Image (spheres, rainbow, N blue to C red):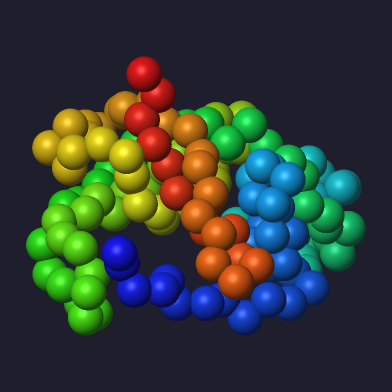
Length: 134
């Protein structure tokens, strides 16, 4: 069993992202004026500076843009190796999530692999992780 993940401090801007997994939703901040997505969540759109920001439930699928395999046990009890990846989200241009690829051997991960979100819940926070699409 791995040690607990670092817990984010939930606030008005990011709580929909960190808690959406309770309903199986990957929520990304979207501007109501220009329609662009922003991640990490902010109170002001990074594209048009509007304050008309709300979370939007997105597909939760994407492709592995880049990745590395970590072999360093940074915390006591941390199981290694594991994959740290940057996932380009489908239908959410310009948004990438840095995450872990789970439920497959580390040597089975490749650039461009199709992935889908799965959530790991710890104390009410739903961490978006990704697994390969069969």
